[in-house]
Image (cartoon, rainbow, N blue to C red; front, side, top):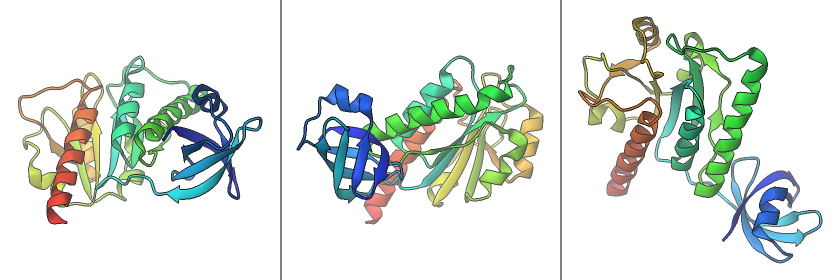
Length: 237
């Protein structure tokens, strides 16, 4: 069944995204799966082509990942953060925090920060619509010093750092229901960043000698974490 994003809900009437509506060439009586503003999905019958509206037939819960995962992403150059958000949202993640860390070598003007967040949220919504998972919360661009205001709600806290003495183990991630992990920019975290994160309860971990790019690493790790969690969950059920 075709998927579309809803932009507004009034009772059981749904106002569908005009662009998606036209691209899909919907007609009265067609059934679609709509991503509602609440983050849930619903089976919707198109009832008015001119107004691009439909009627909710059945509310469908979004796909819920096995663990609540929040990802702290250092701000990267060009559109690399957009790529990260796109794929993280396809896999399924609770929240994403764009971070300003010591070695982010450029600044974003205050008047553009809101636009950056809105752009990332739009990408997240579109990816979630395609995948069928609940869209992640995209936080405002956050200085690393303020990450503790968000991280306190997660049980396990990990910072990936090439200088970490301990290598990530199965036990670090499997026996928890919620986890937040953070990754650095192209130049990695500074020692100041690591000391700050350790003070907030983050445990430094590495993957040993293996080094992955800042753009790709969070996608790689979330994919592995999601797979391991689902496999473990299926064995226990």
